[in-house]
Every structure is written in C-alpha cells, then in structure tokens.
Amino acid sequence: MNTNERQINTNMGSVGLLHKDLCYEIQGCIYNVANKYGKGLKEIIYQKALEEELTLKGIKFESQKRINIYSVETGKVLGTYVPDLIVEDVVVVEIKATLFAIQQDLQQQLSYLKACKYEVGYLVNFSTIKLYIKRLIYTNDHKPFLSRISVNS
Image 1 (cartoon, rainbow, N blue to C red):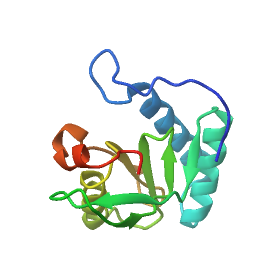
Image 2: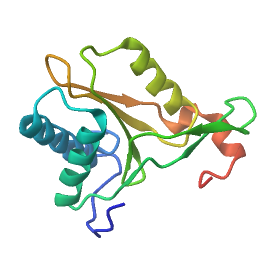
Image 3: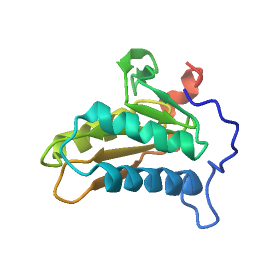
C-alpha cells in the first residue's frame, strides 16, 4: 500500500462527475503504463507498473484487498471479491491482459459494483489492439442494502 499523504479530491467535481479529479489521475497513470510497456505482458506486470505510476503521483492504493460482497436483499455478506487495486479507498481497478475485451468481464465488474460499497470501477485491458479503459458507475443510492450494514465492513 502506498502511504503518501497527498490529498486528492475524491468527491463529485463541479459538473457532477463522481470522483472526477481522482479518476482523471488514474486514467493518466493507465495511459502512462500503456505507453511505456505496450502490449503482450502479463496482468501482474501491468498491475505492478500501474502501482509504480500511482506511487509516483502520490496516490494511495491497496493491492489485492478483499472486499465484501453483500446480498442486495438482506445486506448479509455473501462472499469476498479481490480486485487488483482499490485506489484512495473509493475506486476499484481490475486489470486484464487478453487479446479481446470480453463483455463477460465488463458484466462481472458491474455486478461486483452493484453488491459492494464502492461506486466507481475501472476495467482496463492493456493487450487489446487499442487500450481498453471502461469506467463503470453504480452509485450507493441504488444500493438500499447498504443501510442495513456497517459500510466499513
């Protein structure tokens, strides 16, 4: 985990985009990694390179952090999900290194967002013909089960 104490505005920007400034910085780091390393490496290499970029920018993150997935009906913990990165404790980043962006990966990322406390996620594929970056949003106001749990769990 990066422990730099840099403050980044993770709230809604002036035009209403969720975590606008942080997302802009994350995307910049993703493009830097893609430009430096190109295509064809393993996912773990891209993850480590992205971690390095985030560290250079002073952005806090956690790697392979286990997060709870809740029942949307009862709020009970159904299991855990281990995304590649959690950035500033507000953005989930999932990294892929496959030849094609797969709809199943996109749907899976959205499903996780629907059943956890995080609202913003990125699905990034460094090995597609053109760098694939998809920003996904599923806001907590669409997750009534969160009112039944401690969001810090």
